[in-house]
Image 1 (cartoon, helix red, strand yellow):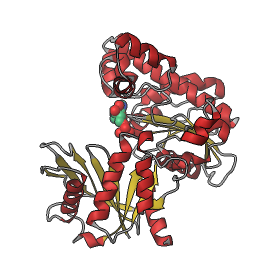
Image 2: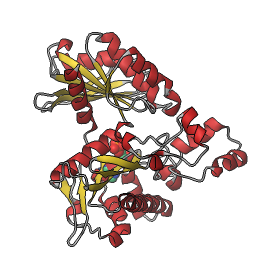
Image 3: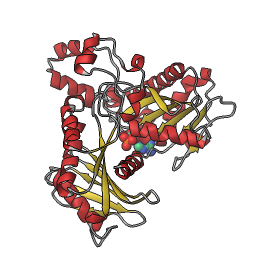
Length: 401
Ligand code: AMP
């Protein structure tokens, strides 16, 4: 079965085409700057050369049409025609409390995703645009939605509730949902498999998804029991441009002294904070390390804050699980930035965590075990594969229907 996986953002659309008979990737690509006149699709067939399609993509519908063109083109194409695609899996940010399990897309499912736009104002409309475009262009092909929140739905009440009036939960669904679920699910399962602990209800792992957005999860026996992102992806550790957890009273205070309205304030919290806000340099960790080495104190502070906050999250999740067998680092920073990995682990020696500094300086292409001598906790780097999780769910749901 050939499954197309779509991850639609507001002005971008990433895709991967899988052959699920052997779970191989046939091609992948990215449409960038959708809606702008310099939009471009970069397409990479597995084992072949990258092909660029410089074409104006007015909207997501135009982007999907261009994806099909790239997949079937003479140069770089990997299928003869669209009818070879038997199912499409969509990454969806937020389906609220009721819609969290991967599911076949119906009109009702679309309506529920739309209804939860206030909880995912940047992502849900884009995810919907991708779904609608695919349903329109290929009406007879099953479409499956896979939710970023899904894996975290097993959290107990004490972990997902906020200490606000209880009615805010019952009436307005205000609770912790958590995000990056497909990534936490994939790497926690891979860690269990690698360590021979699959199916072990006592296997306790803290997964650290560190990318532009960063989140942590406490996973016990394959089940998520806590995670650092909340009602929205703004909560948790300071991120590339997001502030992470702050004193909520800061919001009113800063709005007053800076004369900001709530939309401007939310833009500050989402786009101008995090390591960008602290350093004043940017959100890419490679730039921050260079600046810090050159003596830039604010870049160094941003990195220190990131590692400090991460170390504290990992330790608190060891407490949440009353133990910790493994720590897994994944995503852009987690997979590539060994200074961040060792920086976070420095706060964890009291828990028996030791990292092998030499092994840690290897780029992870597959599972990399960086556990140090005498460590009572395994430290692993596992490249994430959210697209594969979506493709697997899509295959399974289509097969079951
Ligand atoms: P992601 O959101 O998972 O794609 O991660 C993107 C982020 O990963 C970038 O903003 C960088 O900060 C970080 N990153 C990617 N490659 C490296 C690298 N080689 N070293 C340090 N950080 C990296």
